[in-house]
Image 1 (spheres, rainbow, N blue to C red):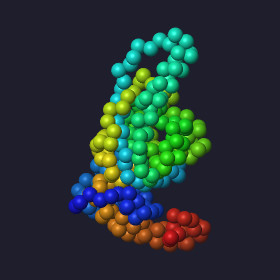
Image 2 (image 1 turned 45 degrees about the vertical axis):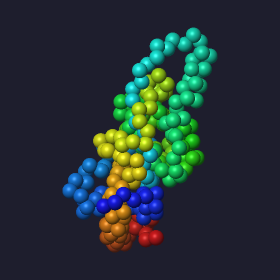
Image 3 (image 1 turned 90 degrees about the vertical axis):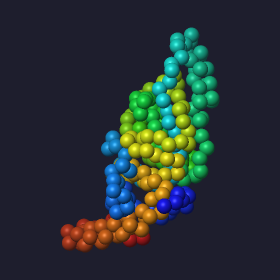
Image 4 (image 1 turned 60 degrees about the vertical axis):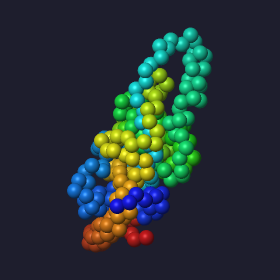
Length: 235
């Protein structure tokens, strides 16, 4: 199967859940388990759902520079330089609709992502952010409903604790290999990674799974006298 432009496929995944995608992958591959991230990967609050092609970054533990600030002002100068010369590379350039996927497992307690740069990524068009490192500003990112999935909440800031290893290259994130352009589907059940050579074949099978599930649950809603909601209402 040939790789495809997964940006062109995102609309085919409208409404599809992670469970639908995995059920479809069960029909296409002998080991669909390899495409779901570790259960520690969770949204910053319930109800976050996104889909988009992966843009990848790998961060590693920094070789710390011995740093004893002469004064708070000196430290702030160091921090400003770090942000100006290094942190911008974390986000980098990406097409609108991308999902930013970060391998940060070496520094789980460091909050590379938080409120300000999370909003900045969304403002640039990111569909979502996935990291197997830390996310900080927990209250704010939830209040802002930022589309962030993380394995940890980490309060430490990044300077002198982590540095960029690779960009736009295959990475390991929460137990799954992610190649740039792989399609990411994320919701409360976790984060699925659909390889590019399977991405075009998944939607039809997944929609069949979803339609059957919706019809069955709709009948049960009616039997139980429950009001219908968006999970059982067709488009």
